[in-house]
Image 1: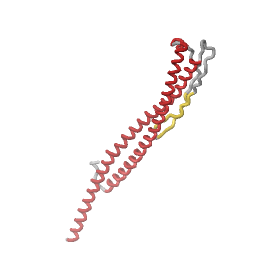
Image 2: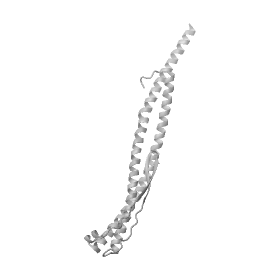
Image 3: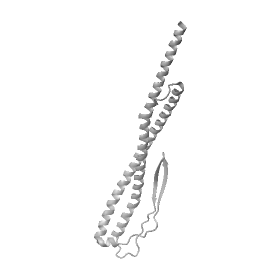
Image 4: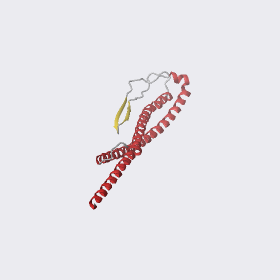
Length: 201
């Protein structure tokens, strides 16, 4: 901006540029507030799901201990797995301020008892059910973590842009405009003095 010729046109152009920078900074400032608000919401939801996952995980571990006491470790390892139908995760993607967020991780995970199992027991089926409950919760945790990671990335990028406008471009434009304005004011004063002196003579 130091190469700008101090004219009225340059002052008007710099004024428009300064106003544009201020508008852009206002937009970015509002955007990072909205991103931070949504980030805190996603983090709170992640904490709730994480707490539920931890509780269900403890229940699954207890069920596993009972199953091991009933069947032995090798018996549990040889216990038939559930029938694997095609499992699908239904994801809904939304665009939030340019960030793709995933919601409603619907998981079609129907746990059915294995019919005809040799040495079938309540302990083994309870263990199966307990660990099956962890799968939808794990999907929700994964979705929340991915949303949080995307929001943090976008927030940092927005923060960098806002700081660049606030701390670099806006001060430069303000300083250049002030320099041109001061130069034009001095030129006007000199012209007024010359006219006054010419009138006197």
